[in-house]
Image (cartoon, rainbow, N blue to C red; front, side, top):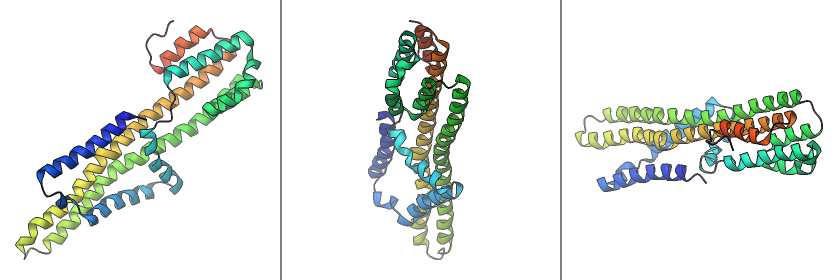
Length: 253
């Protein structure tokens, strides 16, 4: 669980709610038509920007911001270094019994290790891995872009709702008592759009982008592991190389 995402998003909404309650008249900030226009409009326009399956996967990716699907980097370094050490000591065929566990950890890694054990040339393994990485990066980038789009469209539809409200308000200029409430309702949609964008969509997009970069780094580490096994690299040198890749200090041991 990513506590930072949970605390950050939760605190943003909580502080806004507390400020509204302290200011009095919280009911004035509830307007169903404005909510429908802002949320519904933002989601609908985003849906029009992507194929339906990609849009749905992008929206569901919010779960990754709270529970990221990435391994602990230090544990990953130890795990991969142990593999390189094992092969150097016992040979490549010693990995045969562990293939299933590699697939359980990551199918991308399992595929590479399966090919390596089967004697596939390293260049072919790298070529297949790079093609798979391109698809993975494209999928992760789409998830980020869906939330980027929502971060742009929620405020836009909030402004549209405000303009609609102003037009409706101007039609009642002959009733001065209706101008204040009408203006308040017109502004609520802009408020909804700003809250949804800045307290939810934009932070989620940034967190997904961060985890996308980490996931790709881990995939790169898997690829470096296969290359290190093929070259018979010293495990200590390999550990230092992976630490450098991950940006972890203390590369030499």
